[in-house]
Length: 288
Image 1 (tube, rainbow, N blue to C red):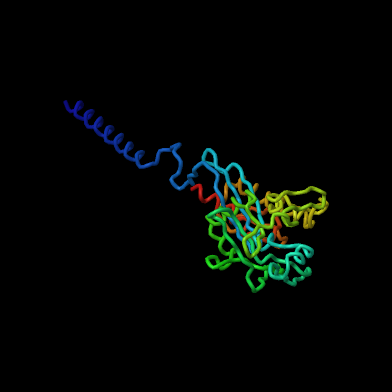
Image 2 (cartoon, rainbow, N blue to C red):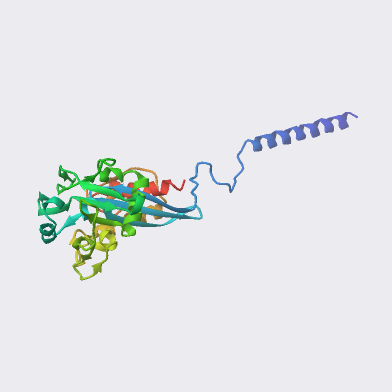
């Protein structure tokens, strides 16, 4: 009897130890294939981001598929204070009432006093502001505005306004006009002939990717700057962000003038790098 009782006590101790062992295991997290709650969740679609500059408006498009950024596009278009200009001959024909002559580092520029963007009820009629503006690079230009929009370059800093402006430019809905609102349909500014002989239409003439204004050394087109040119620099930034999936971290440059994104040193050397990188991030962040 005593032997049976001892065996029963030993069995109960084993059961108790097993229970304690199970309790301990329950305190250990079980590996799971579920995503971490801190992981970024992206919604599929194409999103836009903008970088407004005094005479340009840059845009990035980032496409997300399967919850991952898979591709990008970029463009930069002229603002009215770049395209609302006459040639010297056109200015002489239009007369002083329609032309504002501005002296700059590269000579005299002839700005139209009146311009319009959009059509119908959406049309925005602009007039040249009296005081010339100075861009960060030291160049002088004329700003445009009206009673509701003091400065068009500031107005497009709103993303909805920027998107609207892109829509109008891509539709060719921009013109120089006279004081009575008559459109000037046939002006040199509406068409650009590149150094390689390619003739651009009214829409393409506003697109920096088509104009190839800043190109890599040796291309024979545009102003040749550096080994990347403007397009090459933007592609380096875009490719890096897609590869790294838009990492968190500081965006800066090193002593060799190369752009650093988080901890990754790129070969991009574009001067306005912070605005360009930010427009890509602004587009990406809309997918969250």
